[in-house]
Image (tube, rainbow, N blue to C red):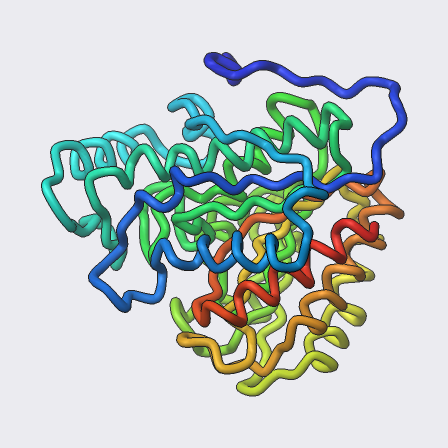
Length: 334
């Protein structure tokens, strides 16, 4: 499979892994418009992240990773060719805002290229980790991805950035087992759906029970070869730092230690923060730092510390910036 057309292949080497965290953050991600002024998934989210990282003095400490568009071959790792054709048809030639026919995802003339760069930016982060340029990376990309299924964009998502990366790790680097940790307030139905029958990629999610899109019941544990490799932990309204950490300690830790992944991907949704525009949890930046530290520790045990974290939700701008700073600091500390 020609996964690397248009992309420089990076391979692991024997050099010592630097204590360094990578960052994907680029102005291209500002070009995707997902609604009118005031829409929660807006370009200002990334401006808030950039400003917070600069104010905290972190920008200059991070290894900058330049994104490039994912190829069609790479996107078909997680999506069907008919769906890619539909997206290309519906987004090409737009003259203003539009909407994907598959669901509640508003788009604009640049959205197709930006979505390709979102998925491609995550793949570049994977390359950087596998080349041992960094141990961990945070990808501040948009549009988000975890609601996108193989053949449907929905919930602000066009391509499933984390799912593409999971398959890419297996196909391009031959890693047998990948673990996805999703702590977005909303269940990542798309990621679950893509890997539901596949026992080689484990999907773990904490989310609000009953929130959009209504999936993620504890009884959803996988089928076929995937039985037991989906673990949903729905949480209640007003979930606190202590409660989400307890869920991670009691559910995530044994799952990771049993599965023994070769790489961990994080769907880092920050819409569980206190007073988020769409979420109703009560998690603070320190709460996000605590669960990040726990995942970093597990990665150190199981997969040489290799983590790529990918932005999903998070819509209160000041809280988003503070939460990302706490998350990135915890990634660096690993």
